[in-house]
Amino acid sequence: EPEVTQTPSHQVTQMGQEVILRCVPISNHLYFYWYRQILGQKVEFLVSFYNNEISEKSEIFDDQFSVERPDGSNFTLKIRSTKLEDSAMYFCASSAWRGGAEVADTQYFGPGTRLTVL
Amino acid sequence: GEDVEQSLFLSVREGDSSVINCTYTDSSSTYLYWYKQEPGAGLQLLTYIFSNMDMKQDQRLTVLLNKKDKHLSLRIADTQTGDSAIYFCAERLGGYQKVTFGTGTKLQVIP
Image (tube, rainbow over all chains, first blue to last red; front, side, top):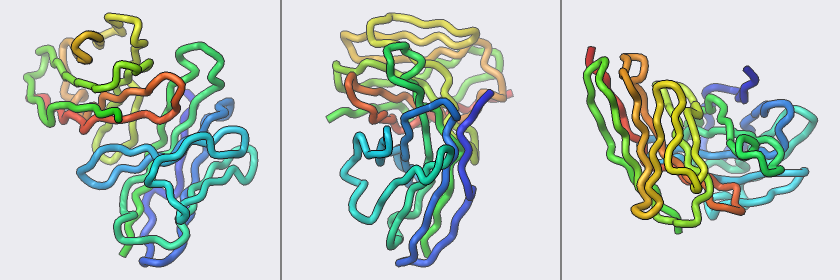
């Protein structure tokens, strides 16, 4: 069964450093997403991406965050200057073409990257 | 804005049924989901229901939706120790891509 993969599984960085989290969405999916889960808190939506541009973003997704699809398979989240409060589990998700079939709108999640900012 | 609430903890004996409850606030919800998260793992989609449905059954899982009360439940029949995990209720509003998650219910299955 196809699945979303994420690398690395755990990233440790110093405050102020840039990090790039990587994801490989399911191959025929066209919508891509990032969510985060701070320890003990809810899973929160960050951003959605379609056709090489951001289609929706939350108030959390400020100027220090950016997303990119650098090639036909990868989807990345960059945090320019990490803060202590960016420590969280970051989940990538993808969904198929939203053409009306209910299953196509369902988001499938990767295993997550645990980001620790020291 | 949308908000999804769940009880934090549920403990059941192996072989019994588990019922995990969820309430949501936005009546525009189009899709409602149940995700499972095992320790150290990601979010596994279990099942989903359209807001125009009342019930959906999938093997041991039964989802009940009460739109009037904005209440969603997940029933797991014949609960097994492998069902021990955190279960997240989630909603997505029509026309939006953002999925809003509940706090998660930790299910403990006692052998």
